[in-house]
Image (cartoon, rainbow over all chains, first blue to last red):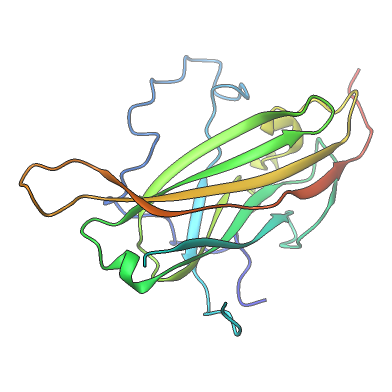
Length: 54
Length: 151
């Protein structure tokens, strides 16, 4: 594999991201780990062009 | 014609492996999509995408996780995006438990990705986001949780 998603650093989106989380309300204290309220971190990065394209 | 495609899905554990069996309390599950966007899509003004990381419970026939994230195309035509901590520390791993899954009656789940593109037309001035006929919905990537439970 060329990369291991989630294991690269400094590949997070920059401030241009319009992110859907922008207007989320703050998580109440003590509920940061509640599955309904917490937001899993996102990572992204470049990958090589696939060898075969449709 | 602009296009946006999910080339594949992976469920990556804390070892960076594309795994299909996870301990629900200790193994990280990072939901990962490999995406291809066409050059003419990236050429549109403020071309952006919205991605949906979904986990499907086949017993309930219901999407039980729907994590949404949007961004401009910062990584060119070929890129990956992932949701969930699999890099540590272990206390921060996105485990099945932390994803909020309930594996008491069913231990097999499906990861599905959806992605759609938007842009801002240059005219008339002040135009808002517009939909592009460029989107994709992946097949399910099935994975299983070990049947272990806390007291």
